Length: 163
Image 1: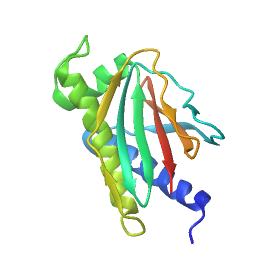
Image 2: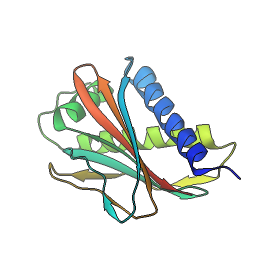
Image 3: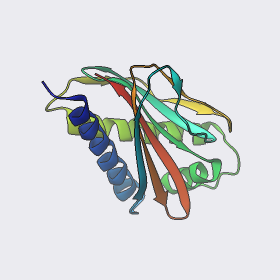
């Protein structure tokens, strides 16, 4: 049987590689992971980070939980501008769809990397707005937070899973 530590490491690596692939292939830029933090919750609790816009993609099957990519508005505007070729100064449906697609592509890439050892299904991406959001996870979740630097912008990937 695969241990939780091995599963967490495999999922974290798959998400990290998928994020790097997204930025390299879709935006033609390298992204740097600047920090990684893992914790196990002993009771339902907050994820511990706040951003202005987040995309969450639920996971089910051999691995349950969610992958979240979270950023401030200026990072979202820059990513969507580089994807779509238009300037954005407010969060409209195109920005929401673009941020949702980031989550969809990152999760799809991670699923592809894990497909030889796990059967995983994913939900549609959900986009959450709000500068004071607090994502809650069940007590059984193991959380890993990956902090990234993209040009002059920061964003976070949060992986909350149980198996």
